[in-house]
Image (cartoon, rainbow, N blue to C red):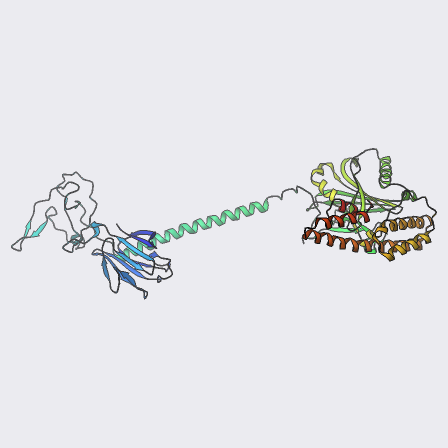
Length: 528
């Protein structure tokens, strides 16, 4: 079998067989020998395999080099000949000896012998010249072969004897007489039929793959969505959170106070409002599948001004347990803050209770301002605690305005009352005019006592004046704090540890009240 080997930069990249007929080599996808080098034409070279041998013919304007010279005409190839296409590509031909022309110009074709005993006298040696002849004119005396004698007459030879395998002439003997070489047209038909079969198989594979993908997509769409590991705020079809606000009686966050925020799902949310209490029955989770109950309670008492924060919270928890004994409360948390700058100090406690013939898990959030104290309860069935605990603990369900946070204040248990409010406000004005950070702690204490007096005397004008001064103080504190933060970071960039420490200690001295968020951020050195 005739073979071709393709080398690029002297490295073999491709090889194949050449069947009888014409073979085009080039970069064209329709070429029989597909090449990829950029300096090779689409149809660069033609190799023609015939009964007389293998012939090469250049088809490209770029030319083909054979034995160091351009291949400018159709030329017969021998075993081992190399054709150069372009700068780097070579085609080497391997032409076995049994495919070469004999010395007398006649090519012998070997036809496989039929299985018969080795001593069968009817086997005859044939040549391609006999095969290509008229297959219809078969001599009657098939066991004889005639050759021209010296006198021009045909002499009959006796039937040839069977030659053992590997005889000198290398010719097999066969009973087959009616055979011929396939024409070029027949070879092309066979080649096209084989390509069609390959294309059909590829189409079936592609169609099968597309069908399998479609089935997987259908199964995935029919499969129910996995349950959320951690429940979250419900989301509508437009991708936005479903929520609403309830006004606890102070005008809401748009009026400078705060509002109760809750998930609002059409047909699944109900709000009940009573004096001092709001109850919201709703659901949460992205698909709003889990029950959620939010209860907001507020109380007002002048006694709250003279009690510690945790003491007021404990008394309100005791009132809840009086209404129902089926409460199991955890330990009250340490103080934490909502918001930024001075922040809103809060406390919380986890609980479990029995209500409406069901066990509920929840958390109570507590904060206060002046003589008012507030508790927000958020609870879900105990069966959903594992998935809902994180959401309930990290969601305040409250929206505070900046104005409310800046004007937040609590009572002073150490204040005995009876001070002159005008004197205290005058001192506050002097401190604020000097903008002296070391006097701000004293300024806040004076404003705290003034506000307590305004509540006791129900003097609203005095309260408005004191709250205005308090917001002014908070604004000055924010500006100074931010400037110190910039100095601290500049010292860090310069690797000036001494300056860093000096700025930090100065800020700790100025913000010395644990009711201010900055008291904790500075001592943790996190600089909000």
